[in-house]
Image: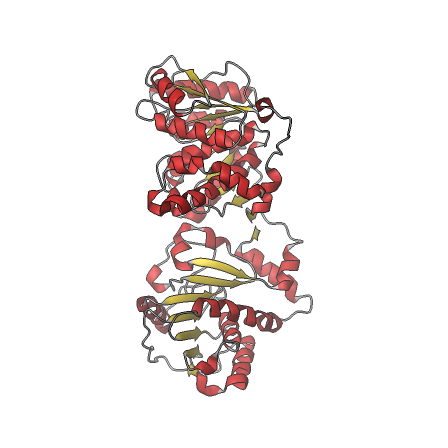
Length: 508
């Protein structure tokens, strides 16, 4: 699914409107679809309170209201027309059609600066259609007061377009109490890039796109550098399994992982690679971890380091299809030196690697190593690791832009982990991953992802594709594990054990 910035969406809309379709046509066609979604949200709740502004968001809201069960007596509508005659042409048309269908008694128009806010209980539902993307500045005065009262009501809130008060494509300096905190956001046309940033997640809630035919047709012809990954994308990437294949056909991976007290990270990464289908997996770990690995993952080979408690050698003794470094290796001086030397050799030979966890922490200590990371390597930082490496970022939006710049500068793939993990490619394209669960916020989850990624590369996927596939599979495995063990009880080992089922689900 393509994702566009606000300016790009405006350009798409202008293109659609230049082809003979009017905004009023779009609003009229979208109204019934919005009403259907709103009715679904209204089920088993009390009264519905609808707040409509005087601009395009209000027009969509009033068009939807016309198709709701107004005559049930359980719906109250407030339309803001402060000062009188402030409706846009489309909003005026939607208001007139509503009155023609249901009469004026069902519509309370606010023309003064004050109005009596209704008594709303937490069992009711609020439809927020005050302002959407047409407003570029924060709300003030009575509008801000109304939004604050909506939030205080504690009711189920459905916002149309975007929550009133939220400005697009930026998450800096927002005051949550002055923005509608939606339970659900229904956006006509196209989803917004801002929906994918953590700062606005609590404001937008769950979001759904209401299809507009003309937009769908236009978008098919327009390139976008942002996409949300879909299951069919991953299905097409997965290597086919042949009846007469052997383990040699599915590649070999080596994972440098573990240190004193962190051998669990090595076990999890190796399990991830094996469950992802790699033919042969070797783990290079400190010698004290030999018995742990041979017991916990007997399907893998163990290559003990000369160091007892940490890795001091990162050298390839034979050719591997995939190399991953980082889970639990620590930041001892010997380990940093070993990583530094390895990257210089790998860079000279143009052999990409997967760098995660402590490998990134080692690089943050000795930042000159950034210049030696091989082209098309995959870096998998969470927010803290990214900011440690590339500087503290004030918002998700600026962090994403920094990741885009870094990926281009060093010609690497950045897997910026989060609720919508962003896979950033050197060409500036960004793929957002939709799978996952809050249950995955558990120690070791990222180590499993590293293993899956190594397993995918071992089977022949290019690093940029392996990053996308592994992240999707990892998130889906997390969802499956959460179904089995609950949000609180899921362990990283449960995620690793669910990787095979996740792949099976995608294929079937």
